[in-house]
Length: 174
Image (tube, rainbow, N blue to C red; front, side, top):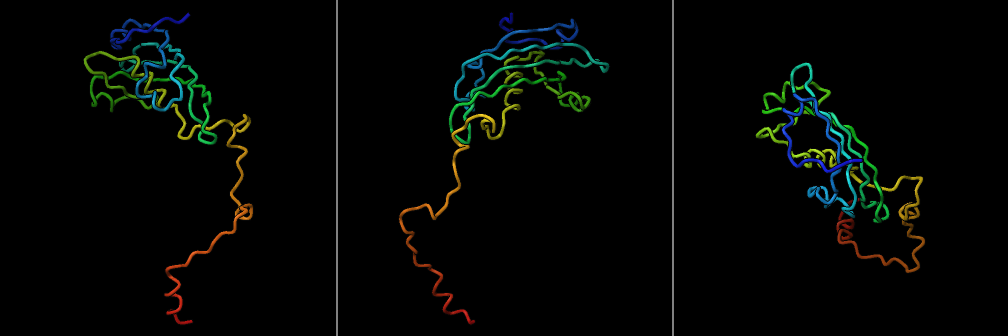
C-alpha cells in the first residue's frame, strides 16, 4: 500500500543511503497542472529510487502512474488520460554540474539541498500531457460524428455581397 510522501527531501543524502520512496500525491496538490484538467480528483502513484552513478552524481530513477481527466478537443467532453511514465534525473547543485550530466539523465538543479517531490512529479506530468487531448479513434467521441461543412446542405440561399475590388477589375486592361 502506498503512503503519503514527504514534502521535501535531500536527494544527496538519500542517494548516499540508496533509499527508495513510494507513496501517493493528490492531484489537487498539483497547482500548475490543475488549469489543464477537467477534474483534480485522484492520486498519483510515485516510486523514486535514489542512488549514486559512476560519476558520483545523485540519480533519481522512478515511475509515476495516474489517470488525469482532460478535455477532449474534438467533443469538448471529459476524457480519462492514463499516464504511466518513467523518469531519470540527476540532482546537481549548479548549472556547471548540469552540463556534465550524461545524456540518459535530465539534470535537475536543487537549491539548498532540498527537493520538493511534488514539483518533480508535477513537472513530469506536465511533460506527459498531449498538446491536443482527444479520445482515441476506437472510443466513442461526439467529435468523430461531425461532418465537413457543405454549402449545398444549407437551406437558405447565400447572398452575394458586392466586392469592393470590382471597380479595379473594370480598370484592368484585358
